[in-house]
Image (cartoon, rainbow, N blue to C red; front, side, top):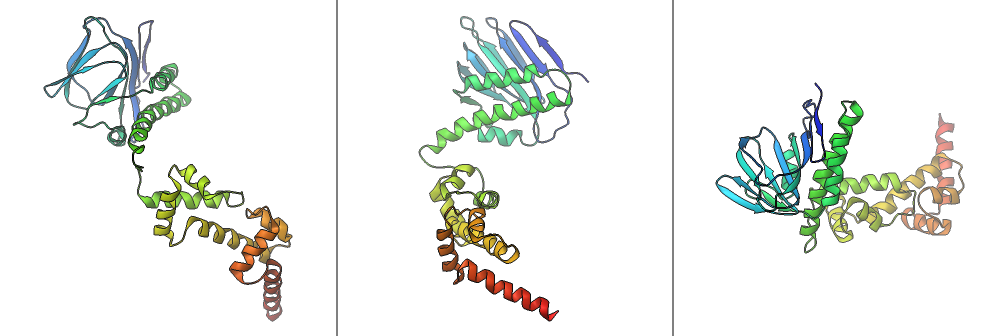
Length: 295
């Protein structure tokens, strides 16, 4: 089934009917410069439909309430509810819209501060939203690559709304979207992939998107140690393995586990294991040799 697609100077619309994704997928999108008093409805939709106003004014009516809206306002229509909206007679609106479905749709809208109790939002990220709509419309041909493009632009569209609302909420007080264990897990993965580099705790926090003090608190809660303690332990565990299984120089091993200065590495290693890296290697070489001799 091919997408419905029209393109003119005043009206653009893409309706994608091949709905394969269950998480979140684009149903249609568009952009329109409305005539005075142009209206739509009363009508019910089978998907979520979000309008964002670029210019002008209009009204949106749902559940007996009429909202008067203007530039940078957005309004959400939920599936299976009767709505009506109309462009202003003197200053008709121009808007973009996206229709979408999927089990994550409601969650995405909640993160963008939309709900059935709060159907209206205001967003300043106009340029981004227009770019994403244009991206969806330009990927109108039915190819697998374009399928991915449209889904990608849908995710970025919703992400822009969420990001703006998140920043607005997070300024007076840090608010995080996930349980603390999720951030700890991401911190552990970051260390696993970057321990050999000269990373700092701030690098971990910035990569995850949380502040350093919060990272320290949740890491202590989840791992019973600070991020710095874990990073040092992780590096030294990797170093001990290299000392036991390779003939690499200590300076090379130091570099491979994130220490630019071999002397600093040796000092940290001795504080942890009670002996120097060279002595540790000799001791384990003796153990290995003794084991082989016994065999």
